[in-house]
Each structure stands twice: as structure tokens, then as C-alpha cells.
Length: 315
Image (cartoon, rainbow, N blue to C red; front, side, top):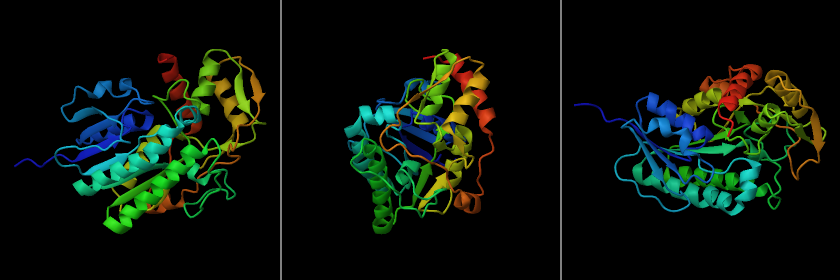
């Protein structure tokens, strides 16, 4: 008798990271249920998967209750606006998907006796007073600032995930994702990588906020997906940082984009947004030791691939 295929339901499955995760699980012969309401996701990201009988696309807002027939082995909650432009345009939806969406996803995992995986974020650390940031750091977040709708939604989601783990004994995983980039990012989603690449390819000035000395750590999507899968199949329940510990100033990053894109764009400076983190770099000791994971793709190599993708997908 043939063994039943494992079933994974991914909320936000048509988004940047969700769609790449769908790809990897289909490759691993999972049945994948991709749930998305397409506020920020794009059907083009998963259109190539519609030909597979093990892939199902479900248009649904996970902030509302969902009922799915049959067995589910893994519920992966990736639904949420994730860029400043998006969560400032959709503040209430961001709060709802982090609270009600997490509640409904956890409820589904409970009913199905499934593993629950939460896509959390380095934004839980806010504008950190610890550098680099360890999982044990509680963060420095302005709950009523404009970024608070995203930061606090994810912090609440983590709290609810751990409550379900403690009370209902659900097998939970929490990943804190640091800046990730690569193909399928939206051209104008407001994050620094697509912003700079778009501006460079259109020979526009690259907009640097503040003095450009604030730092970020950039992880290529394939490295991150590898970390997600290692955590998914691990025995760890609490938060794990997954990101690239290589740290660059925004000014250094802008100069690298100019170099690799071959543009003659200049750099212009705008005021720093409210509560914009000054430093962001993961301590990945836990991921290295417990998951045997660390990133392999160098920033220059990943950027070359990403720039090439943006040239082919200008909109």
C-alpha cells in the first residue's frame, strides 16, 4: 500500500518567501495547500505550480477561520505584509493577520495534530540595544509607533504560539527572519533591496535614509529556505534566528548595487524614518549548533542573481 504523502498548508504561500517554500516542498513530494488572499502575494509566484496534482491554491484571508478537509501534517504561517510600505498601507490587516490569523492557524494545527511553524521576524528586536541580537534578547520596540503594527503583531504571534505549545502541547517552531532578498520580491515593496535595484536599473538616484551608516545583514532566499526546512524538521520549539551575520552599512550596500548594476546613478539622502533600526545583525550561534545551518551565498553573488531577475521582471 503506497504511503500517504505529507501535507503542508502554507499561509501567505503566494508571497516572496512562501512561494519559494512551496517550490521546495513540492520538490520533496509533499502535498502543498497554498493559502493567500493576495493583498501582497502574487499568483504569478505560484502559477508554475498549478500543473502539479499535489499543489492546491486556496484564496482565503487567514484572519478569518479556515476549515480544510483531510489530513494536514504541517501548518506554516507566513501570511503578513512584511515591508514598511505594505504594513503602513495595511496596518489593521497586519495586526489582524498577526493575531487572529495566528490564532486560526494554530487552531487548525491543533485540530489536525500538525506541526505549527511561525514565520516571525528580527523586527521583534525593534531598534536593538544589544548587538548582535541573540534569541534571548527581549527587544526595544515602540508599541505605538508606525512600525509597531508589524513589530507587535509578530511579538503577539510568538506569545500565542508558545502558549499553544505549553497548554495544548503543539509541536511549534518559530523562526526570526532577518533581511532576506532574492527573485520574486516585488519591485516597489519599499524594502531596501528592491528599492535600490529598481532605482539603479532605471538610472534614478538611490535613496539612502539618514546618513547611511545604519547597518543591515542580507540573507539570500535559498539560504533562508534551507534554514526554514532544517528548523521545520528539528526538535526545537522556541525562536531561532536565521539570517546572514555579514553586516553592511546601507551606504556600502547602495554602492555595491551601483557597481553590480552598471548604472551611473548617484546617491541622495532623505531623513531617517521614525523608529528605523540603527543596527541589525543576527547571532546565529543557535542555528549553527542546533540545526547545523549557516548561509553560503555571498552578498555579491546573490545580488547578481537578484539584479538579473529584476531585469527580466521589470514590473
